[in-house]
Length: 330
Image (tube, rainbow, N blue to C red; front, side, top):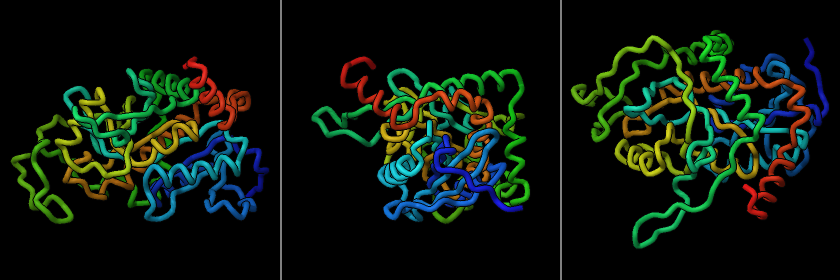
């Protein structure tokens, strides 16, 4: 069946991911794939175009080996310049979870950014300056657009009512064995202060230092709260917990979202592939990328197309936020 080719202005949702495994999961969520469009010579992105539910979506991935906030910002800025009708973005992929007494975080769970306390959903934890009293974080990041926060509220309501569609959407990956949960191996969590003993897996690690956790009936849980973003990989359990405490409790660490929030209004959705400690490896990445992509599809499923048509474009949203900062009305 030949692919349709739509106009550039028909696309209203931008979807950004950082890794090929995340891009693959995103592409699998498309209900319909569209023919590509001719690009401006200055635009280095490669776009995947298609439809998710009732929304026309444009997907782009960061260049191979170029993760981080700056690279994410470049991809997003090029995307919004090429597709000026985009109303909002989704930053979808994997992240390192923060287990705690308050949050029963498991591998494969999903974290969605939402405003909490003084943070707008994402905080750049490595941006600041050294002072005599210690590291002082500076700057602030915008909250997601209202249309996305309304979607999150409706998504949570559906989950409270037992109407989650996460497993339904994840089933689009069933034909790809590497995305299956049983391909990822065991979900094990070591004590915060215990460091990895070496090797690609935890085969040499002391199993007496494992944290004992009750089995959980629900396979995937969606958590809502603050996401910490920075340009360095967080791979130390003690540092993870220290930073989280300083920030009032974060749910996960990742490396791109801080580059988007003030230039590409979006919601950040992360599948948990490790615990942001020294024991991290890549075995859970495909499954976590899949649960995040399925959750992004579920977010889009609760947003009426009519509301998207009425919403400001990303450029209009940014101008409104900048005006609010200038006038002190935010």
